Length: 106
Image (tube, rainbow, N blue to C red; front, top):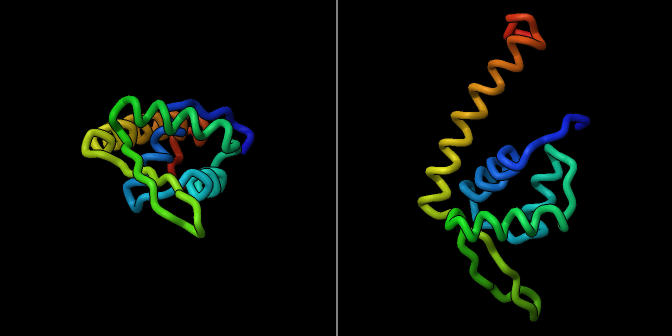
């Protein structure tokens, strides 16, 4: 995608993925990369920031002799996701009205 995407949209994507199921860093990166161009080095500071804000918690689980750190959304994270989804809907409708000239059907 060629559009620059802000941190709020990245937060929404991460929280949305984690709302469906817990995930470890690499799998989260792969899923987020399916919709936006980010690297693991970009995602980990986002995960730390979301964790510091109490939107995520972590836990470790053994995998092939090593521990894998999993991220899990919290109740506060779910509330933040709802806020972000509401903001996204309003933003998307405004952009669609400009780009599509009021023709929301495409």
